[in-house]
Image (cartoon, rainbow, N blue to C red; front, side):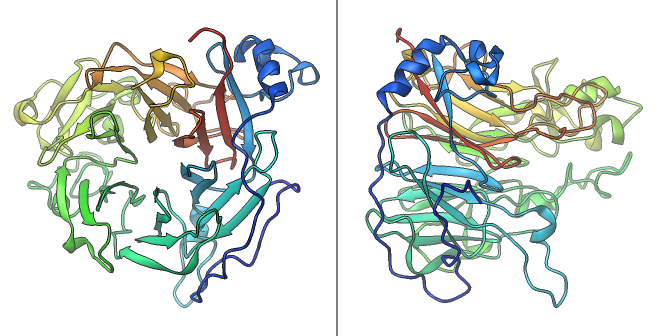
Length: 466
């Protein structure tokens, strides 16, 4: 994992024994070379960079991503396989949760576990904006990650664990604490990402099924009514962040009707939770008499919601219709694309995006490096679609949604593009990058992870006007 310039420690994995004592490493460097700053200013715009032959591009600003004028993308790290969510420490150190290939996460009866991922820690000790020190550790990988002082929380398979990091160390000491375990791994959605707020973990427990049908993803199969999945899945649960060995039954349901909220975050400006939710699939496949393939490709919308205690967002009984701009009744429960019925009483979306874009990361920007128009707004990373045929597959981008008075203000815009240079109808093509994690660094720069190619970008602003 990583380039040949990175120092990798293959002995930092944990197989049950305690971690080795923390090693002494060169201190991180947060600032960027002045030459990099000058080069990025001379670049003029990210779009101009990407039109230049590789030998003529200014040093530092990386080709491949398309950004608004004045922004400079650089490669912070490569080869971080399965990079999911990311967090940046106050000293600039970067911690990334990773997952192994899907096939390696399945353990055959009597077999040994494959590569399930883990934590990758990265540090830049030179003034070139690239990670040159890398360490790996962990008892398994996943999506969620959060840092509170010297405590690092992370999803590890069906658990959420907590590592203790000595000051300035990239690796933990002692065995990790298991905070929550036995989270459900059956069915379609088991990212178990979370938000840490004080003493509380808010955990996404995604649905097991597509639409709570009696026969999952089968044509004209009606939905279970009531949907028993909602008792244990398809919502946000809260757990005590300091209590050990909790199980799902020890948590309390915070909100329901959220099919899969991988893009879950807290807005530090108003302290509310927000999510951009994965909508259901296969309207046409399952109900061809009601929906065209084109309608199914664009619907339902991926909803941006404020997650309030006790709220119900409608799944599986309702879905968001991008043309009507509202929740309508699902066909599994008697809907025909027009009826609203009980959906009028569900909590409505603040904003919606095209169907099947797959939102996997979300961040409210509070820094001062970017222009003022970005402050307080939300960046959302879309992993990209697999089921928009006959339309081209889409998503594969980071968008920005401006906020004002704790609500979206106007429409969203694409902030980072170029992850999917070869658009096709049959899914992601070779060379496609898939954005997942977002994090804001202490200096206000933005980190973006990619779990398909293992790339981590750092985006800085080098324009003149603020």
